[in-house]
Image (cartoon, rainbow, N blue to C red):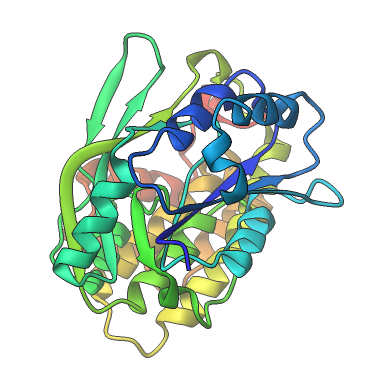
Length: 315
């Protein structure tokens, strides 16, 4: 059994896959299983990956490159990885990101030393050139506290900075759509854990591309994201039902979910969807001490059909 399995979806990353792969193959931990899952990428990503692998002959026997029969989306690709990983511990890496070469050795040793079911590290958000922001990714001492901290939007749901014991993956409901996929998976995994350990080192490098940001909000895009998010929200709400989760954390979570509809609520059908998504939520938001005043104002303006202003509407 490998010490660590790394699940890496691959799609449209020919500009970035070499940087990612080299950082993975140069890890100071020897015993690793690499699951590169080709989501029928139309570019040269896999060719580049194979070329890079030639420079690391000692890693070849550890690498599994699996091709999906058709483009299926990151959630389904990750599900394949989770179902086929054989490592004692399992973690994810996005193929346009990269990691410090000591990341998996340090996190694995921490897990063994502390007998932890999950180890969390910090990460940097970076454009790969000059802009970088450290993210302190854990304000909790137990898995349950981390669930609530994520629901309160104090900590990120990301799977890429969390090393889970492989047994945590048993009997989880796998999400389908991309929106909210990390959230649905991470919550279930954390609930299956008893002991958490936090390492305040930013081992993971999360890449963002400023050039990909657009100021135009597409109505179709918003609606599509909502449909995906709604499916994974159903998984989450079914999962938390009857569990001892901070009610105010769930209020913050529910309000953040319906916020994706803000650019569309000027249309009556989407206003009704926003308003009726969670019964009684408007009043709960206004009473909550964990909801910022600016968000409470936005909720009131939406109820009065005074939000959003024209420049913030989806078109």
